Image (tube, rainbow, N blue to C red; front, side, top):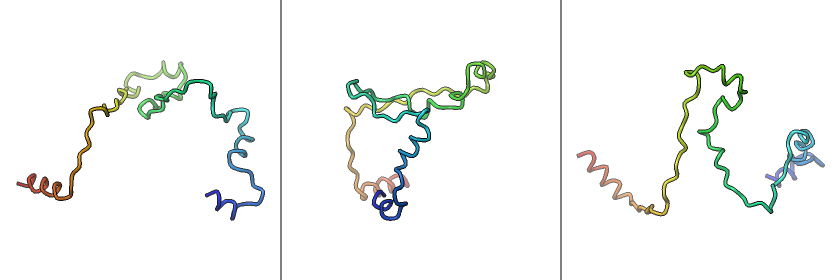
Length: 103
């Protein structure tokens, strides 16, 4: 993509991130973080944790009727990969299983 932009793009055009940084520099800071801190896996970005209540303030949350509140979901759990086994199935075995199901 970069080669395509260099070849066909505007001459002297700034990269997208620099253009956006100029526009939103007061609102958003673009950085990679502190390399001296120990990294943590982000577990809060799962889709089951996001609904319309994220955009409501405390007063709006209090005004919500109980029946209008979204359903709460349990956090999905990853399978235990230490006990998982790999299964190899050939096309012949799949056909045999289909034939047995039809019987």
